[in-house]
Length: 203
Image 1 (cartoon, rainbow, N blue to C red):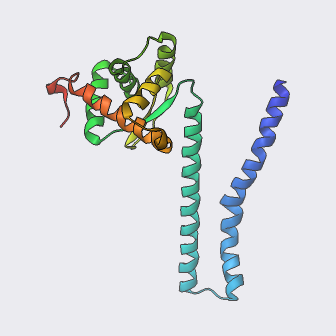
Image 2: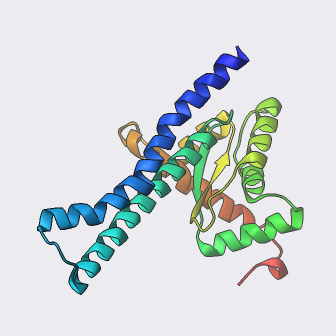
Image 3: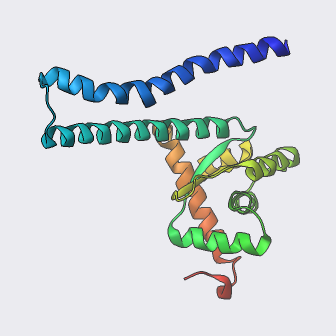
């Protein structure tokens, strides 16, 4: 079974590497040849060099854009493999700074502290097993740097209560995610107001 799995993985990676080689080597090599073939020119000019350089710039910009989106989608897919439900919590620079200061006092990750604030502020039934699992999931979450929002793993009970507290109606089904995220951010901000001492706030 192990040998078959390894062979399947290697055979699956070969087509990917083939595409990488085409995009990184074959296509850039063909760009100048295709340009001069379509133009029907036999000599190089400064304008031609500039156009070919521009084509290279546009090509690599598109490749980097696609690679960035693929990487982000894979990161989100890996995050979605966690056992707990995930919500995105949008944070303003001020709230992020206060949450960072609060997390520093507890020597914990932002996602863990945010979950604990939600867990304490939102009325819920006791679900210790699910709560412990959410804490472990938050410890393993990898956040994207420089983003205005970050992911927090929650329990199903917290997710349900967030939906109720957000006031989302049945017709707002497509906007539930936004309602939940905004409500979670508001609860975290309000909780920090009466938990973080004044001298520890970040201006």
